[in-house]
Structures are given as C-alpha cells and as structure tokens.
Image 1 (cartoon, rainbow, N blue to C red):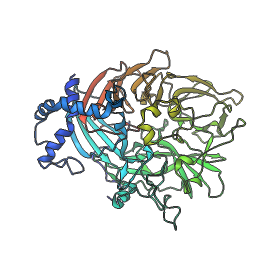
Image 2 (cartoon, helix red, strand yellow):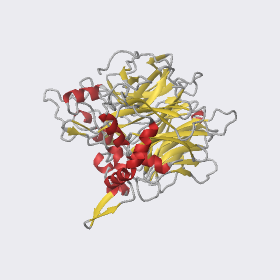
Image 3 (tube, rainbow, N blue to C red):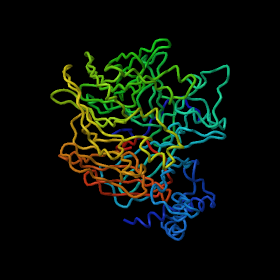
Image 4 (cartoon, rainbow, N blue to C red):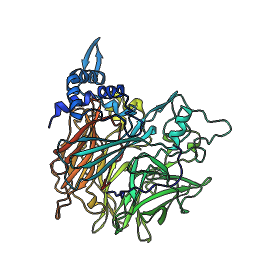
Length: 591
C-alpha cells in the first residue's frame, strides 16, 4: 500500500483515554490449529477477513487442542528452555520463551474473537491498542538493533466477555519500499544492518529525509478527535484507521513550526490539562541549524478541531541539540529534563544513530544537565541545574504536578544514556549478557522536587525497589498533572537475579506500603493501561489494568485484565498468536 492521501472518517469516534492448564494446552497447540485450517483452504494471515477461520466451532477446536497439548507443550518448552550441559540436555527453568519477544511474528488478521474467562466491567468497553516489534529481517538483511525492526500494531476490542483481536503490520513507506526491494531499505537506524547497506556513492544522504521515508513510527498511538496517529521521536506521524489498524498516510502538517533541520520530537505527548474537551495534546519538536548547533525545542498544542495544525505554546533555546524521549506536564508548566548529551545531526549523515549521542562537558554544573521549567502561559521559564555527579539519565515520566514550593516530577532514571547502550538483538537474546549488571544497570523511579525559588536546590527521593529494573510507568489518567499516590509499572529482575523475571507492580508512594505484584513464571507482560472506575467517588486505585502477556512456554500471547487495587486477575482471554516486545499501550473508550 502506497502511503498518501487523507484519512477516512471512522463510524466510531476515536477517544483516548480459571482453567490455566487447559488454557496453556490450547496455547501450545495454536500452530496445529492454524495448520489444520490452512489445509481446509483458509487464509489465516495477511488475507482479507480471515476467510475460513471459523469453519469449525471453537469447542471442537478446544477438544482437538487438548488431544495434542502434551506433546506440543513439551516441544515448545524444550525448544525455548533447554541447554546443553556436559553433553546432557538440562531443562532451564528460567527465561523460558523470553527470546521469542525478539523473533519475527508474521501473523496479521482482523477481528478474531474469543470469549474471556469472565466479563470485563461495563466501563471497560473499548479498545486496547499496543504497538510491538514485528519483523527483524527482510530478504538478505537483518536488523542489528531491536528498536529498528519493522513495527506492528495490535488491538483488542472489549465488550463484556467478548474480545476481538486485530494484528497489523504498519505499511509505512519504509516497510513498503523494503518489501518491494526484498531487502532493508534506506532510513535512519540505531544500528546498521547485517550485512550493511551501502548508500549510493552519489548520495551520501540516502538515509536522510527526503531521500528516505523515516516513517517507522510504531512507538505509540494517540487519538486526536476522530484521528488515530502513530508516532515516534520525530515530527513524523502516521494516520491509522482505528477499525482496521491500516496505515492511511502521513499526517501532513499545515503549519510552519518545522524548520530546515527538524531532528526530533517526542513519542510521549501528554493530554493538555487545560483542555475542556480532553482531546488536546501537548508535545514538542526540535529544530537546529546546518552550521550552528544552537537549537530550539518548540512546544506545541495539537487539538481535535484541527489535527493537522500544531499551535505553538513556547520556544526553548538550548546551546546544543538535546534528545528527550518524554517530558513532564503539570497544570501550569511543561518540564523538559535536559540530559548531558547533544544529538549530532552531522554524525547521522555517516554513522548510525546510536553513535550520534555525544557527551557534553560535565566539569562544572550548568544548563547542559538541568530541568527546564516552561510556563504554559508564555511567561519566562526557569532552569534548575543539577550537580555534575547527578547526571539526568532517564526514559519515561511517571507524572508531574505542582505543590506549594514548586514542581514535582517522577522519572524512570537510568545509570547511563539509555539510547546509546547495547540495544542489540544479540545482547537482548543472550541470557548471560542481559543478566549482567553492565547490560542495563538498574532503572529506578526517582522523584525530583524542583523549587521555583532560584536559590533552593533540587532534591530527590527514591520511589522504587533498588534491586529491580522498573520502566513503562502508568498512573490513573484522572490524576495526570495532579498529585498521585499510586503508579503501576513493568518490572524486570523481579526475582533480583534474572533480568527476564518480569512482573506488573503497583507502588503506593503516599504511605510507602509494600509493593503489590502480578506475575507468572515465564510470562512476559506489556505496559499496562489503567482504566479508572466510573463509580462516583471511586478511589484512585479503583479500576482495571489492561495488558498483553506472552506465555513463554506455550509461545502464545494472552489479553489480561487485573484489578488495579488488589493486583488479582479478573479476566483473561487467549491464546492469541505471539506478540513481540511491546512499547506503549493505550485504552480508547468506545472504540
């Protein structure tokens, strides 16, 4: 599908916002079912409408699954978890199937319906959309960095005890051109492919716009009125059909915010707390020069009334080009955490993006390592610097709000620049490397108290278990930009030993109550969406967490609902075909 043209208007408005053994047996035999239906002449993947998928009743399939389950599960478990030791095959109980998160998942289909174990609450009626890594090779080449893979979208439409799944590759310009050429095509990558691509001698800028699409924008989705957009850390956004998840075209901007060298944006826009409709967003893009490194982060508002026009809120000047994957937003301020690196727009002309993060001088405290506090009303901002022994390295923002003395921002902090690390498939799939402390270090949730008084220093507070690795945080969406007590997140090193020991965790930062955990051995959960209860007077932690999880032993994914307060499972449905490593999930009521 060639990208181009405008979006079609969906008939539905796009808004943001117990049989375990039998189930495992069904999951292990999914491939057998697929092979059987294909033998009947059905088009299971990549076809229109999943022709023939429902030729047999689900009960008949389940009986068939159970008949072959034992052998299928043993085969899957042996393939995922066996290790040769001293000439004998020894079953490795840890990390079974974790590497499957980084294997190509080819399945595409629409509206595949299954019945959940229990009905979801009435207020959980809508769609959970989550992007993932989809395909790691094309023809004679494969990706080296896992974040470079061809992206994919998954949607789970919830109505009581019925859940319909849709899986779709993002048919971007990058994907389409690569598929047509049967190799990985031109475009900016964190790591060069293997074997390396060789740009034409007459065009050393072959991987740069406008010569390459650079539209693999699978990291996150938002809805702006009726329009669903897929985005990443650039100014490029794709329009997505919210029903089919098919890419319609680029969101063509009808404004003048972008300058000649627009090198970045954020994949994590935030709802505008001043919006009465709740459909407006705050985000930014970064402009820099050809010769000068002076850069401008241009904060803008994107509204449902005109989703192709970005309205400027404030401009923030910096001496060198920063790189921010996320930022903070309180009721009155946008908070930009400046990390002590510059993104070299010259380096990406001749080397992969992972090498474009150049360290800045940290011999003295200054604006190169600081929080930029930008008023949303256009008045003069404040810069709060940090000592040189406290570099700001982070991935995601938990929440931001104001108190009597200033602004509070909670961040997922890292011990080093997370975007210049070893984000390669080889390391992600090597247990010894990923379990070593040098691989990623410990991601910790830290609270930064930013006094508006220029003479008062920044103070910090630890908000997560220091023996684990925490990321992909969520708060109750009704508490965004307001003081919160609870956050939920994904945890690695949950057992303090194995990186792939994963869990969904809940923290109470007001009382310090011991964290609550949802986990299953050798299951690998995605980021959650917190759907708050619609009950009048509901508590902050009253609601449902929605996420997908890979059952590593069965090589199958499940859609799961968990009580946000107790962390107990309230419903699950599956098996569905495997979903790879996921990014940011969103719940859209009524979609």
